[in-house]
Length: 280
Length: 217
Image (tube, rainbow over all chains, first blue to last red):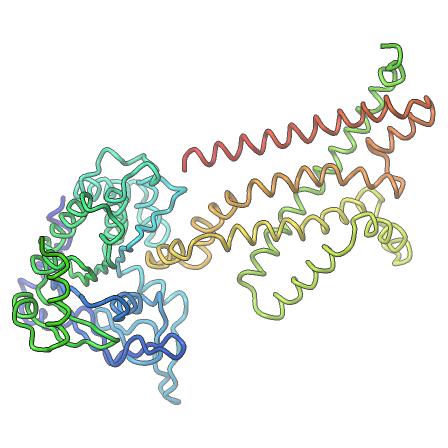
């Protein structure tokens, strides 16, 4: 059931409190450029197991790029990213000190442990809901089909879509598609989930159902990095909020601190503009 | 109806010619499709030199009329000492010729798949081969289906050109009958009707396939 989502890691945390200090995601001195534009400038971020980190900031601040670097959907020029202590993406050759990209197979294996949900859902349109969810577990993780399907049904029940098992994506609303996408990512039993503005493309009345699914996931102890523009959601769900602007992390802290008593002028200006716009 | 007596009298003969047309087209369409898909994949994913070589091939083939190619190979093959029955020589030329066009159709299908689909497949840890097989190709083939069916229809009609190098099929059979009966109008109406039936069936079947695969969509 839903409560078993992250059992292994959460019980490990209870037994070994010291382990909690070891980050499950560690980004160090990340630099990334698109041509002449530096999109990420020396970004470092560590996320501990079970932590929910919400990344906010203006458009073009590098939030999405940061997320996409984590599972190497974007290449980056320097810096390291490690999941559970294992570097992913690049390794440094011992003799020469040269930085080499890992083999495609190693990168794919690393990606399989990182769940990602996209702004535009990106379900596979030629597969029905069940096939969307079971394709990767069966073909990548080689889980028995029956077992994968049972797990898929569990996950669909968790996101409230048990009746849509055989439906094709085009017949689903945006909110339903996004919940299927969440289930699809969870079906790989990821160590960490990345959410890239997953409610931005949704009609306002469909946002709630997707946020509720994320909220439940966070409650179950999933480690999450969430890029969002939903400030009140960020406040509710985040253990820590990271504010990015122009490719750097300007400020980070507990939600109440960052949202109500920000230290930097840049964050204050951003929040003021946001509040002016969305105050009803 | 008396005017159509020559056609009625030779209709079975024409149908036998049509059988040959269908056989020729069917023999060519499979290799043309496989080679077309292969060329499309190599063009999208292959390295630079390979890509240029394929591009050169496409430009060459697309710039020469099929009739000229057929004639060329008809005279060239005996000189090279390759002993290929004329039927297979012609099938080879048609396959190579249509592979060039089919590859462009499939390449367009692959390229028109949104980047987001690749992202989703990669984020799930799929290997390149796996995502090609279960995510990219199934969708690319669907996108390419309508122009691909048109090319298949065009291929069927292109077989009429082989009568120029002496191969016997529907058009050749019609010309023979015309020489015997001196009724070109009636005979070629018959031939046209037969061609139309073959192509129409093919196009309908294509539509049916499209609808079946798109409905689930």
